[in-house]
Length: 491
Image (cartoon, rainbow, N blue to C red):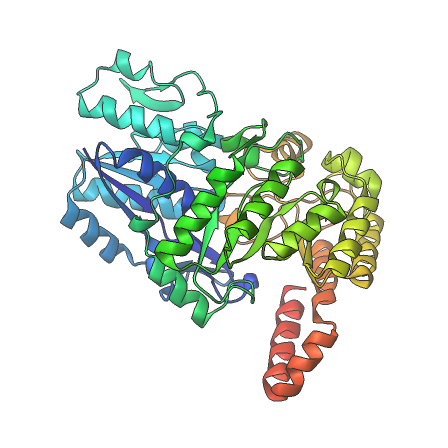
């Protein structure tokens, strides 16, 4: 069959600054599994159309190819099936627009949605008249079985034998049993990057470096799946499960060799949820990178746990090309970490990991979340103080975000049951990156002020920033003024 996989245009909050690119690696995995038996195309609308930035409202931009261009591509290729990927519920409105567009082109085209949003909200997706199927959970094997079944004119009773899907039968919504997660990740083919606009990603980061540090040919990789922890705001378990599963070091490094040789990649973002969960595996990956002479720089933007790090491992990471790690203490109050977030992380291990990394020469960024149910304004003040403590120890980037009640998370359930959601809560509100929870402890406006003040930690002048400012003082002054204006506007 002819399968057209689409990464829809993205919604980008103004508060995040200039839009940057990503790579739909999940779609590329599904494409790789399918293309051995079917004709497959991947359309990365925000990747190809990264220059296309259009205002939706005062808080949000639409990033990606216009609807007319997407429609032209679909018509020109004439697919049997269109898959639409939704990794975040805040972007769902763009996906439903694509589904509507597909059915206007040809109502006989079968539409399938996959990703975090369809897995968390399968009924809502199937209630849309333009959506025929949803894939729930890990998608690759489900995609393969579903397309094969549809190619063979499969009867409904056969569809019911495919785990992990939802569809409509005589006006009723039908779900099959959950699919078991893939245990041997090594048997998956490498993502079909040849179907992605790799050169567009490279050009985009040359014009607007990703996070200010990825400027060379780069790619995303996932070396493990699953998270055994229970942080109440996290969506990782929805599609990847709670059982940690790691690819073998040999398989991981073979993919690194592949992207270096084929695409001349120089920088890699590892998008695992727990890349260092198995320290021996991580150490072996580092050793193999060094042994094979792979000249790369790499980063962990999804975050790694501080309690999985030690001096020996950090030294190996540094030697193999690690330039920055991202740690997620989430709060500076142990009670909040333990009892509210349920992260099971000792904050002293965060301090230790930051100090060790600084000595070894790996940069550290830290994630914090404020506005959790049960958190007080005093807790948030203590978290800000803790961030400054980590800054003294060597961390140099900090990200303070609002606690976001995303569908499928325990935080969302708490907010619904406690009546803490703001009255205008919606998929669209999720995409604006605004406070969506109010409790007796704080208001939305108080959270905005606290978050803006917390993020001012990034405006402080470090020795490195001072050296750069000396080279271009006018540009440095403009940058600081713009950043300060953004913070004041969001306050």
